[in-house]
Length: 240
Ligand code: BEZ
Image 1 (cartoon, protein in one colour):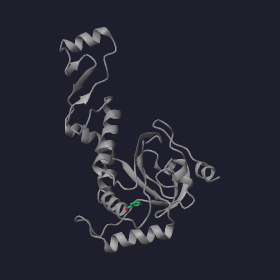
Image 2 (tube, rainbow, N blue to C red):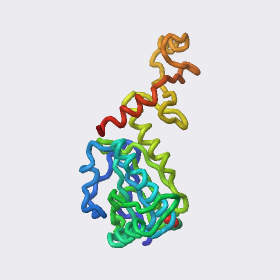
Image 3 (cartoon, protein in one colour):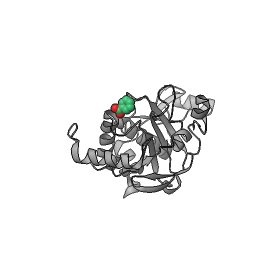
């Protein structure tokens, strides 16, 4: 019986799927997701509960980086299985009382969804009963300007996220789209990017003969340079 309740309405969206739609009450008013964010990248992230230490450290870190995400055309939307008044009280406490690693007086400007019924959390596979049947795990959904899920990352309750990595994901996805390339392990703007594999024997031969402006480690593994400034100006110019 309990299992039935826990699985009712549960779905696990996948990379490449359309982001499930919902309307919700948030600390910034009602939202219509993802429709009202069309044209922007979105990070939809869940956290287990208000007034908890790991979540507080995460919210402060995210809030301190919000301008950086906005400049990369990315909006943040948070969620936890708590009510609106709890959210408001927690965000007020963060602003008025908490000083952490040099961050203080931080206003959380992005919306925090109230999801007491777990309707949204279940739609996004954020309730993982092996970890907790009443709290959302730390899920991250990166959604592109067309409403397609492009990256999903899950962390357990005890592990705070790395927000530099989330920013790197936003920049890397936009770079891949803008330049039709892929990004190798640990890529950061300014590092070489991976060009699509050679599509014919002739192209593979040309690459290995060094006739193109790329570095080939083998015929299927070639990289090229894109200046850091070019990457950043392409991504950040949308906001000018
Ligand atoms: C926290 O945010 O500190 C936390 C929340 C739920 C379980 C464990 C830790």
